[in-house]
Length: 327
Length: 306
Image (cartoon, rainbow over all chains, first blue to last red; front, side, top):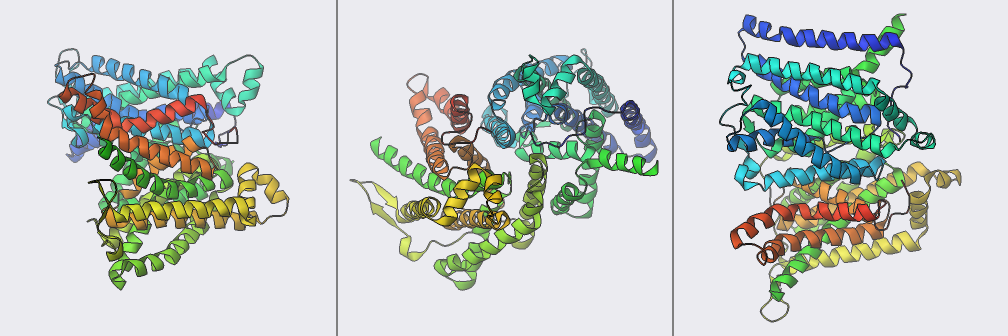
């Protein structure tokens, strides 16, 4: 597998630095509503919630991309499953957030198990193209789902309810619920990566043949990781639908899948914090470029190519070089 | 019913020929250079925009087509030199990212240069109108011309790949790149040639389809994904696989969209059949891909067990 990944044996110092960075980012997020009050900018919370959702999705993708060397180019499909889980249950009068998340995770688990089992029969370029194709399949399914607006999507009548209360209608509550979900999933992902399961996954990334030789079946571990990652991403979709109060197939276009990969690589692959940081930086950069010019995609594309050619390990790589250089 | 079937079969063949022209370049780039190029669909779009411009400038479709070809070659060589060449030694992930960036740049660049509204290319006088096929059945000449042109190019590619020295190198490169370069072949030059050839074919496909489609910035995207499906089904690096895969995908897609709802009417009520058919039809090619991969993970004509 030709995905470049940082060496497996990480220094413990760096490990804790990674956690510290995560805590710093979370603290920054927690303070955001305060900044929104001070600057009197209510949009800050909506942007913040959107960033939190993508941070969850990028972190979930990093779990398989960074630790399992599976470059999934169809991960936006799970964002869509999460978003449509909200829209579909809402239309049947079921508005509870926990039920929305349960439904989103259930659809995603089913889809990820089937498509993952087929995609994992292949590797490398094939895997990338097949996950992309399956992502598009899901996209076209929702485009032709005329009951929910088809191509145009459908607005949500209400946000999800939290244990029977409409607390999420308040942008601040929505923001903190998203932050709580991000932190909870970060802890889960960190636990997974540190567990025996995670070590087998990393071993498979490094050398699948050797893992088989010591009696483990890489396929099962990779598929499990693929399913877990898809389910986590769908939680981000639930948040996005609630943030936008709108659901459309645009959530799951292949551009979105590409942007998720951009976030992970921008932050540095194979350490969950990087993906979160990458999501923050990528979305802020997008917003900032969009203010500069309506043709921001052109600039973003140039930025991407330059990043790949000159700083392939993303922000984490740059930080590591910086700290090493000072010693 | 039979008439409709023949019409749709021809439409499928025409789409298949287009897909083949694009997939042929893509599969060579994958197979020989081991580069995943998301920007291949963009080249198809560039071809359409180039012919729209040149045809408008010269007032003739044919002159536009003639001018488009060298311009396409230049575009291909420039992209290869600036973006693709530094990526040869990189991971697939880096290639995905950089070519994804390229897609964003070209899509936006096209919007800046030509505006966001769709362009149209006039049908050449010589090939407009329809000819009768069987009984009352009519078919547009231009679509038949596309099929003929595509078959001609497929035959040309067959000769090039199987009966020339360059073709021998291409086949050898697709099987074992390192060995070819160890035997003293200038692999860099071969790569540039392959990429330029692929770019030329994709641009040509975009150019000949321009008179029957509206030329807009989204046209590369839908085709790109279908082309990926074609390459995966046919097997990476195999031109024959690309040809078979393209026809299979296009015919399944076209027939599925028309006959899916009709067939479903036998098992369910008409309105439900229409709706289910519309939902299932776009997914059909992906289900086909999944089924083929399940049986043959390396694709129908794939050689390497990647």
